[in-house]
Amino acid sequence: MANPFPGMDPYLEDPAYWPDFHHRFIDCWCEAVADLLPESYEARLDERVNLEEGRETHIDILHRPDRSLVAVLEMLSPATRPVDGFQEYRAKRKAILVQKVHLMELDLLFGGNRLPLIRPLPAGDHFAFVSRLAPTTAQTVRFIPGQSGTPLPTIPIPLKAPDTDVHVDLETVFQATYERGRYGRSLRYGQPPLAPLSEEDARWAVALSARK
Image (cartoon, rainbow, N blue to C red; front, side):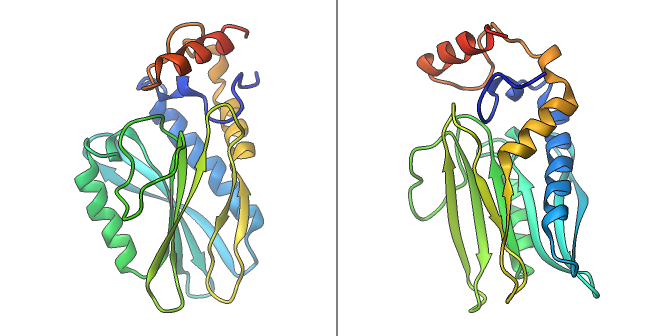
């Protein structure tokens, strides 16, 4: 059953379904990245314990033959957003960046607080944050905004210099996740979503989902 929304589905931000969606999305994302990586790389799932949501999975990009860590791919959850469990996540984030690796943080959640950055974010309903380890060893941050009602963007995954980025189509990853999770059978379509939408966006979501 196809997702009724182009791009992110706000009904998936329901606490009853988000943990399952998060796990499945990370798995599909890892497969998509692995299919694109050069032979000298591998993509592996890894876990950490989050006091708010238990175990959370992320993706490690490793370079062979020594399997050195090149990049970490994260997908933010309600518990890792400011103000909830963000202090714990910020400590984990700092520990990653200290290792001098690239960091990709995907925020598909609607509304709420975003990652604190020096520059203000442009308008957007979700973001991909790319903290890239530059040749000078300084981190440069790029953000890729997305809008509700539009397909999710294609994003770059940085690799070890001089290798060029690989580009992953998040919309394809999302649709594969949605179909594998069979969420169309269970989500509360036709009712107001639990995601923190504006009144206008909530009406749009209800009207679009009621067409299923």
